[in-house]
Image 1 (cartoon, rainbow over the protein chains, first blue to last red):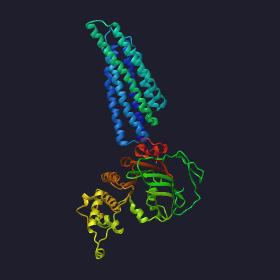
Image 2 (spheres, rainbow over the protein chains, first blue to last red; image 1 turned 45 degrees about the vertical axis):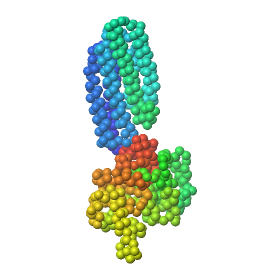
Image 3 (tube, rainbow over the protein chains, first blue to last red; image 1 turned 60 degrees about the vertical axis):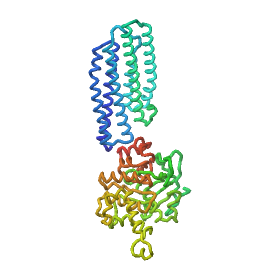
Image 4 (cartoon, chains in turn yellow, purple; image 1 turned 90 degrees about the vertical axis):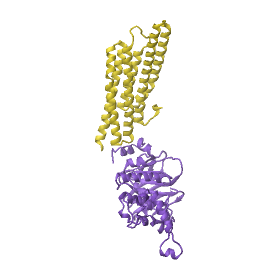
Length: 222
Length: 306
């Protein structure tokens, strides 16, 4: 096949994106685990290593731009590089949101234990990102649709978690300075729930770009 | 083949069209692989080609090509060497008539006029459908004479002693036409002070724009270009590309190019011919280069073969 070196560069890009995806999923699982165990050290690890993801993301983005410029890909090759370029941004954002989760764990108080099960949501969205990255790696359109469908589950869980949390607030509402602390806790938790929901959305974005890349099907992009 | 007009008719080939763009040839019972040529566009067609076949002797160089070319736009023809794209281009102003062994069947309509009608006026046709070739081919004459050569031949411009004897001198008209054509070809500013210089003293890129000006001076409606920039450096090439895009505001441009990026940059629609003289896919240029239907087209444009 002509253009051997170009084909090699494309497959190197695919491996690199998958590697970054695996790292991001690992960080996300570490953050969720830190939340489950109230493990501040683990959470700090996630915070302190986010820059690695950012640096790798910028390197791979530059690789994509080189491919666009030097190889001028078209058709399936173009869709692959363009999809990878977009997916990298989603992965970097998931890394940031995992870091936010770690940040929440390092700041949370020992007294307030929410009844909402954020750990389960954290694990679910990590599964979703993992599945989306695998769909990209295996060019599997069916898996893309699965990720998109499961996002309803993520949204439902997040909505219920927010509800439980607010009910908690009403039930346990104390007076004075204690209320302010509680409100701050609840506010942080609501932001965290929103972050988890967004991780789910990034997983769907990855699946949507992959589906377009593989089948030229833009169904999940809208 | 209701509209078919043959130059040298040989009727033992029957072509039948099956639905969904799939075509079969009754001649050999061989099924041609799927093709996506049913291109729909807004606006009017300038050229309407139906079931065009070309043979060079026994070689079937172009097979059952049907495509409508929209007016005032750039249509690029791409494909590997020997795929029939230049043959197709030459059919559009009957340049293939000049090749003795060539036999053309099918119909080509310019607006509503069948150009393969036995009574068609070839001079008029080639005036309406001009052509620019791969290598610049100016006449060894002055820049001015190159541009006004066509109109003088056609009798649109009369000058010189004989014309003056008959009370006509179009020197001024000629100058206006030369200026206008050179401006349209984006060459005027570079040559306006040396119109009497020999055209062969111009650079390759300037010569090619002069050939375009020469083509425009006759007042064509369609301009056929056969790899007009392949012999030029990148700067001259980008000038030709800019020019092609400008020309498409007033003219219908059909361009054969080996440079796929060039086709992607300047054309509105692209037709992909593949080995054996088949038109395999014809669609908006962005569709062809982002998301072609045909796997063979995908393989060709991504460089996996050819």
